[in-house]
Each structure stands twice: as structure tokens, then as C-alpha cells.
Image (cartoon, rainbow, N blue to C red; front, side):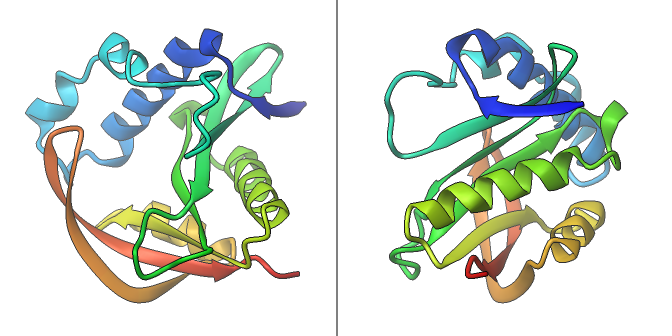
Length: 169
């Protein structure tokens, strides 16, 4: 049974392991293999601020039998063209547990929490070419809104497409 709770500082390494492993599996062929192969869990874990009181984002984790299976990071949108809009900053599930409803449960939690913060719309960015990710988001009511950007994520230049959805019931 999956349980979803807010992340704590003790979750940093487990979240980083899922984050790195997800990138290495999902983005193979989209990002240089050399970069993916050298990604470091401890380096990633050191960047998280769980439990710090930082109001710019919240991270929820999905656990099963005490083991982390995935996470979602969300908060107010950073986009200047989207005031009073929420954003899903990251949603990753351990690849060994894809297609088991964990991502869906994490997305529902993130959207519900944004809705509880009086946001009626949310955005997220998807790496261009991430077909599996795009299909998942579309199955959850997200749609491309026509916005594109080039960004630097973990020191890598990436092209991203923006998805949006209503948070109203």
C-alpha cells in the first residue's frame, strides 16, 4: 500500500537516488550518456532543502513498506506569465515501480495541495522528446499550452515544453 507524506531531511538520499536513476532511465538518448552516467546521488541530495521551512516549494514522497518509491515537488509557479498559478517542479518514480499508480497518486497530492493554496491552474515543464512523460501528463488532464523554453538543468542545456491544466473540480 502506498502512503504519501511530506518529505523530511532524512529522505534526501532516497529522493536523490530516485531522481538520478529516473533521469538515467527516462532521459537516455535525450541527454548525453556521459552526463547521465556520471550523475551523483550525494551531490543531488546536498541540494535539497526538505524541512527547512522554505515556502517556495514542497516535496511529498510516496512510500511502500517504508521504502521511497517516488516524489513530487510543487509550489507557486516561477513563471512571470502565470501569476497565482501553481507549478509541478518535479515528479519522479523509481523506474522499477513505473505504471503502478504511484505517479498518479503523487500528481493528485501535488494538485490537491496547490488547489488548497487557492490556485486554479498549474503548469509543468517536460523535456522535449520525453514521450512517456508527456503521455503520462496527458493522461492526468495536462495539455501542451504552446510555450517552449531552453533551460539549464543540473548544468545541461535542455529544451522543454510547457503543459498546463485547470485545478478546478
